[in-house]
Image (cartoon, rainbow, N blue to C red; front, side):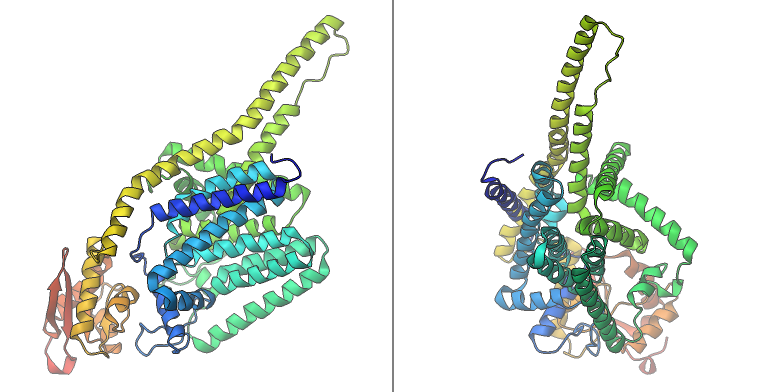
Length: 539
């Protein structure tokens, strides 16, 4: 516990130190290359569209339609950082966001659980591998985590200024990711439970305006796109034809996802299993989840505020999301709160044990009573020491795997950064091959050419040629008909996904006369085929 008249400044210095440690470690494992998951390319393209004056559009799609899936705040930020320094400035902005999230988490934890648990939890967060990774991925997780903890800090700070911070940050969270409506609802419910009706009414009004405004824009810009609830209920959001779940299916999905987060995702995030989950790691996940639940229950028995409400709402949301989205990136926004709850629970268990002592026997003799009291004091002292050491032991247990991960990753990441500075590149071979094909397409195809491929947004970033994804169908006729409807001029056969060989290649083999190979390069090789019109060739 930090004590004394200068406790608050000292605590803030400790919190700032942890944020600096996070930033230093994030630079050690910094990757200058694009994340291959493709969402980052989507955000960068939207930022470019805003910056160029095209509006909020998917420039990579044929016809450049209005975009209506991702809220616009993060792309607007990328429009600014892209103008300053391109992709690398955007990546460094993510590092600033995660570093600030570490600092704000400490301040939030001080109000929620006290100085010592707050600093211990924040220390784990500062060196957490997923947060370090999202410190250079151009994805919405970094600003979203910051806006969440900042909104909760403002709520727990109290007063008019705290309320303004809470409402502003919660609105920014929603404008970054639609899942941010959970933090908007959390501050509304938190004030309602405290009977702070004025703040609750203001927050409810802002929530209504934000949700209705964004929903209205989506209905106008993309009327055929499933809304958030419809997408939530889909069996597979990437295959809408598979239909939606009923109530029983939703319950089964929630239970399955909850167990996946407990037994797979939490161990992977805390003890860095690299996706290999054995029985010991699973036990760790169960124990940490139980501690977080104990901390949450303990807090809600005393007060049900915005933080407790957010944990409930957001955890419930990701539990009912389609299981293809069960991933640590979606647990990350609530992860700082889980760490705070874990260390609060450990501290409370220690304190509970330290004050537990057997009741004296009124019939015992004076010497016997004195002997029992002495033994009780010794037992109590041991329990006090155990209560103090237990959080530190858990801290070390969680820090060691993270530190080992940094040690393993840093040399290769530093070599990657050095290679990138001399234009050598360090992408995965299959992606380097795809990007090279994109550059060839930019230099050797018409500007209005439509090129269908597995990663249309990443391919557009290098080729500047519009295109879309081929349909996931094992029927060659279905795939070929879709290519014709898109007026596709070329297709790319890549090595980045097995779906290309499963769905696209059979169509090419079935309609060989319509496909002409025009490019083959890279290791592993990427191919580009020109598509001839159906009327000019025979099958």
